[in-house]
Length: 213
Image (cartoon, rainbow, N blue to C red; front, side):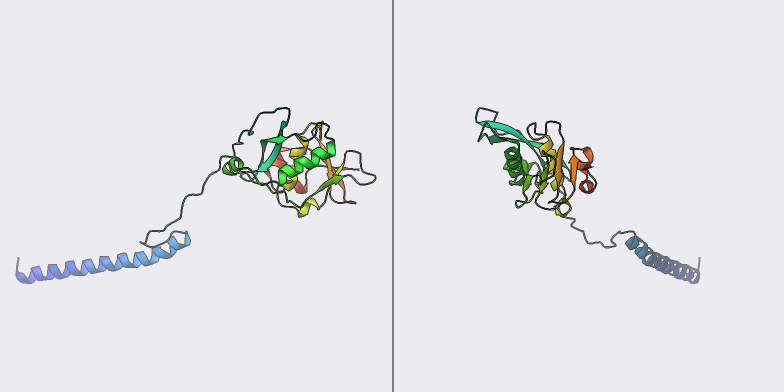
């Protein structure tokens, strides 16, 4: 092969290499917007996504002590992982002759307390405001009716669910596992049970229960 032919071949190879590089560069420019549109970041810099989200167990801790003459176990419903679940608490027995309304107030106070250390570690919290009150029914209400001091639709999510499920779990407050509850008078009364919907859907309080005439 002559030196002239070899030179022509080298020139051709260099031109081919340049054309290939140009094609690859053009392809990279064309693909970049597509990757960006798919949410893929086109960068060689490592991206720190932060720590993985922590998971809570929602496993209810055991009551701190067993029932005695002066201690009773109360079941209260707390919020965990966008639903409510029961937690057993050891509560001092102040009066053996507790009436129904006193029991309601004590259960409400338990819901308004900050979760205990073991409950917090398991992921439990409460949505029941410390300012909320539950009073006996107004004049003309059924004898066992109760009323909230604030409209239920103005309360935080799961507040009504916590109250309904806690009250209906108590044999003294709700022997038939049903409670009649209403907004401040003259708001309508509704009869509630602790349904799966109420326990698991934050918006279920808007349609829960049946109206009491």
